[in-house]
Length: 280
View 1 (cartoon, rainbow, N blue to C red):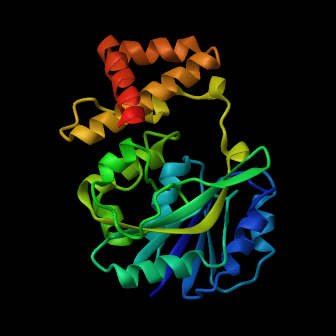
View 2: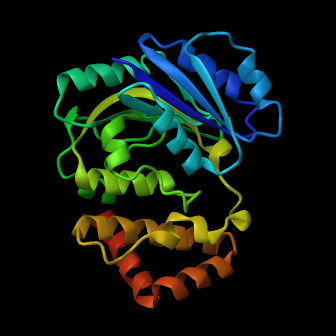
């Protein structure tokens, strides 16, 4: 079973070598590594070209953003299974092997995820509290309650289901992975393992809020008209956290733009869904 590991690359010369090394150190060896260079202007491509492993394929294209770049990788993939990885993250040697074992044990799912570590200010801890291995029942409710989730670098998905689900939304460059996650679990089955398979360095991934284009964020594009109760609650809880975060950073322009787009009722509903998630 070939897994296509897809790394979108844009100006990550400080990180990309370690990321590639983490892929090449996998105990599961039946994979290809696609590096989609999204018009990098630093020495990222030179770092990639210093590797000579035949499993590495580099595809160069003009800058289009992370969503379009990941989607290009999915279309170019030779494997039936896709594993997305950011160019500044690190996966453990057991990562792909653990996901393959999970697939063998729970064959009815089309997406397989595992636990991962947050690293912030030098402190490392497991992110997901869910300890039960198996199919994820009530996935949308678990997303809302923050009991389970999957992020880039912690899941493997079938290529066909990913394409059928619409891939990553190219209108978004912030929160596109969360949107894909929500829409995917609404339509497909998932399985989970509590085994740790990657590190996510939060400090390296945090964006400067005052440089965000609000029209390209998930909170701009979410809909509170979703038919599923728990999906609406998840969107509401996430929306409220974003409003609070923008307020803390003094970015009231973004707050006003979001209220104008979605209406004051959306803020009231979001506060309700956030508080309810804490007490449920």
